[in-house]
Image 1 (cartoon, rainbow, N blue to C red):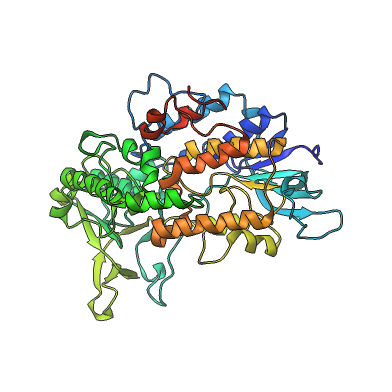
Image 2 (cartoon, one colour; image 1 turned 30 degrees about the vertical axis):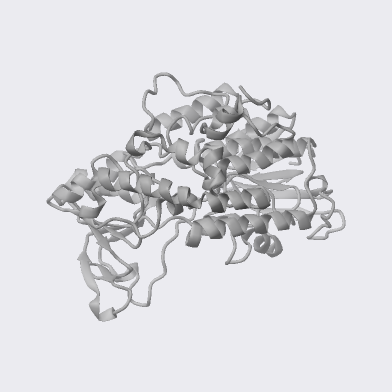
Length: 525
């Protein structure tokens, strides 16, 4: 089968893939969306039973498709989120473009002269004469086919598919443990009833302290109470938030306004903005301490010895913010959840060996029947190995001391006719994926051209320096959380939009920005 040359391959029918489909359709292209599962929604198709939306609903919405009035909470359940995504897909008639149960095995780029790396010095990255040969497999029949596409948009995300399982010294891996070891992905894939049965009456140890770890610990606590307390092993304490209203002030006013971004050094900001960011840095510290004091007060972190060593600002800039489940620390207080610091850990016959990172003789055993690893995913590995070419694999992965090298977080300067949407993180991935999808659609449509490879690489390096400065050791998460508006401004300028979306100078400076500010390409609505 050979598609028309203007057709576009979109890989993944999660939020980013659906948005990419909708916007390239609006420009007259003919997309095909390959989804390896039987349903849309990406990470929202299989979630832990008690999981709720992490981002307040006003920030997590499609710009032209509001939430149903029947959803009257700021933090909808996972089922409500999935219903919302499905309603969006149906409303914009995207289902006919999706091929379900079809896994993309590999991508191979072909050029007429068979050169792997074309010359891309003139901003013509999306005008290259080559095509992508996309090998797909039908999950139901096992049959494969190769389909030719002019463009590919990768929307594979970084929080699914390939679990990150830590490496252990010889004799201290899961094979040494007589109980059951699974990853949080396997637990999420269970039906709620099966998950409840799996943990009922068992001593469960959860490794990790991000959202999935907290949710699973709550479910274990509910199932087993004080009879079999759940142990949560963590390496780093995090600023989990009880709500987004520190001392009654919406967090968006502190971190999602133009004024808040004046406090942060930005890539290519110029002399005056640099001076201003330096001058205002004490205010940045005050904002962070203000939020931290609220979290410590509401969650009683000092009492439980759970005050993080890093600042709340660092948590924001690393896109590591998660909401703590209601009543979590009440369960800690009652004893049905135990928190234990584990700088190092391995397995033994009866459970987990927890070390202090200094003295091997000081290892202590945490007994368990089940261990659930909430240790994240190998997103970069998944992104890299979809390419057949080892050259492209090395390009997309970049170096180990830099974030994935994507211009505007979408385009690799040396991989032609390809865009990536939804891989780098923000405080609201739906919000960011939408404007990226619009930007890619306008690029494909010819509204603007990319700069030269050298200019794109300079811009990527500037953003990489920003990530290292503000995200610290988490810079490879490619988080733009501290610069939502500044980032969106770059995309708006590329597309010929006015980046200032509010009516009036003061409103534009101090009011929080969100998805509804980008409903049209006009400003001030």
